[in-house]
Length: 132
Length: 132
Image (tube, rainbow over all chains, first blue to last red; front, side, top):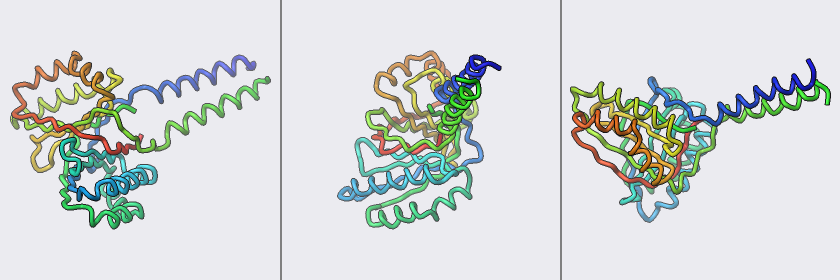
């Protein structure tokens, strides 16, 4: 095979890869996963400190733990001390590993005086539609 | 450049692309986006029909609309007629285009007799941690 032929074959594969990485992901079925919404109320005087620790914990969990699929944290616009986190774990084993991880233990210990209330609402996934 | 050289240069680029597409995405900052949680109660006798229409709408929105970033639908495990959808739009324009889309209008019209209540809770994003 000549240089030009090799170039076009491999360049076509490269283009195909790039295109597939850029296109929208299909909405994902999420059966079998462990999903919940954590509802927290934070001491308003500690809110910025709390959010810094939460962000650090989310970043580490997504980066280091294969079974932590989403940790999407938001706050109510009209009541910023009210936090909601939509959590998705691959399965119960992934969740049990998560709560024993050093980054989760750091978050839990670091925020225990900041959290005024915590409610964990178990969910069944219907569909995770997400743009990749 | 000889065929072998061309092959190795382009193959290295291809490998690099594949590796970057497979690794975990970093947690994303989501400032400037429009985020909310829709809280719906569905007529229990219509729940399966409702979920079918909702899934169709989510799949079309993620596939066709560049500004629809997440539509993550879940139901309360203890009360399946209670639906929660965590919605993220790139900005207000993306949201306004979304509610005028044919697939959203089909969903809205098709489900109006199924939805017993609807509450839209505006959110501020803190961090979207998601595994890609």
